[in-house]
Image (cartoon, rainbow, N blue to C red; front, side, top):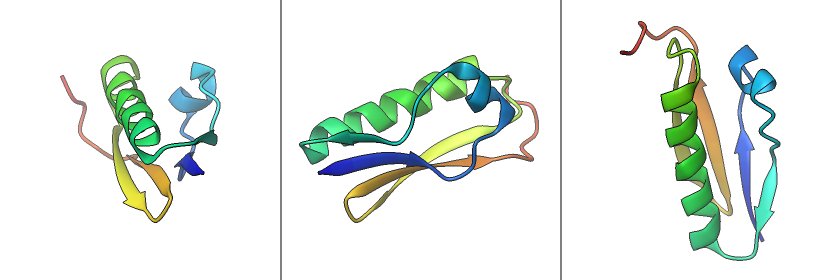
Length: 72
């Protein structure tokens, strides 16, 4: 089993309705979903944060940089 987790839940994430952690049978499926989530979060959230994925064993962990300059 492979998981997607988020390290810290910012306000944008909490309001989004995205539910994590999620589990998947395959590594490829988990990785693809994690990348889709990060792209969505970077595109649709307040843009004061930057999100990225790091593979840690059987977990794809989403990290947030909280003090980024506003991204346009």
